[in-house]
Length: 208
Length: 208
DNA sequence: CCAAAAGTGTTTGCTCTACACCCATGG
DNA sequence: CCATGGGTGTAGAGCAAACACTTTTGG
Image (cartoon, rainbow over all chains, first blue to last red; front, side, top):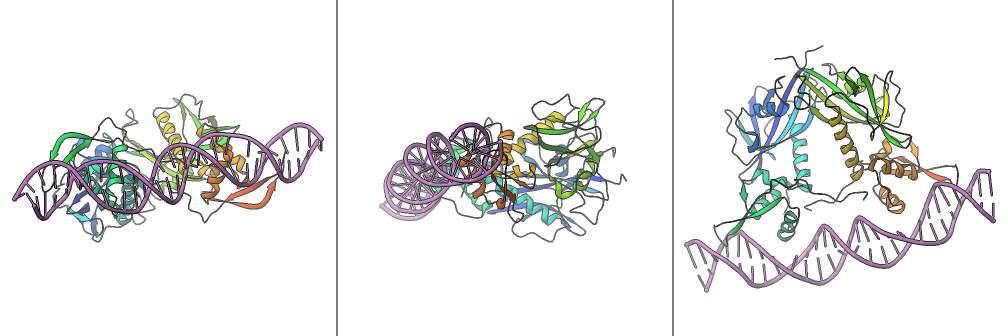
């Protein structure tokens, strides 16, 4: 009866080499998402941070609960329940053994993981469409071109520069800093997240 | 360490007496949401149906996983983890001991339950705004006026009849039947859910 | 024929979309 | 002064919002 095992797993996305990456660990039956057992003395979110082996402080990572899977996805492991978290970070994760794989080209995965990652990706795309969450994958200060690239990589389509800028600024989630970044060409203004902002943009309601 | 207890709880909404009702059970420390332990040999959704004491078949109820709460909401019960489901049904639930309360006027609740119900309510409202889920609270065949009333009760605001009808039909989730319902006034055409329809309406995307 | 509820279109304003050129800097 | 990426505005189309009268039935 109580042979239940409750684990917390994390789908950690990062941006590297112009691609969206997922962090995976090797296991006997394929690659797997980092996990930790849920513990009575901590919150599920804390367990999620443990799954990443304590490499991330709470404010270095965006964490959001995704879904809890039970028997429907692990029919071969009765009693295994997984609370999945979805995470974004601008940092380079360096867990021992772990590797990052492009979300487009995943290696062979453990049972059920394909579905979990696919769902996390759908949620990420959906999130970008109605929020400004993309900056969670970028350093504290970033240019609008960088942010637009992030959106293009994740959504897999080109966006119009002027429309992108207008809307992302209208959403009020990011603000400009006084600083600029020089490189080739005209220096770009740097922006940062406004911690006081509501991260979600109102979408058009079906019934006003 | 493994003194973890995994329970599934259900926030069951129904429509009665022109109000949105929540099903609750009495407990020593206040009213509580119906719950069942998660079991290794069943899915979480099956456990959710058990929480309702087997009174509902899977197709008599709309069930959706809401959130999994751990230590953050039950600090006084370390190790208690609750997977919450959110449910809609047109039926009159008749669990022994249980009572239904208007979502506006909840009785004193057990610890953490207030937050859970508030979240379920937010999700329900949000769902109605971008989907046609309201019919899940109505009998198989219903009139557009009934459906509009449902929306008005849940959203707590009057809606425009013509705009409501245009959009709900445009969404393509319900279809008319050949039948009509007579009462006072002109008989109303009956509608039903289209099982082949995609239940979610596309909303305007932030980045097209 | 009266009461009660069902059903139906149009105009106006706003928001989204598509689109091309000038600007600032470094080398 | 040239190459490189940064930055900016507008006109047209499509969608949403507001709004009032006619139709059908039962009593």
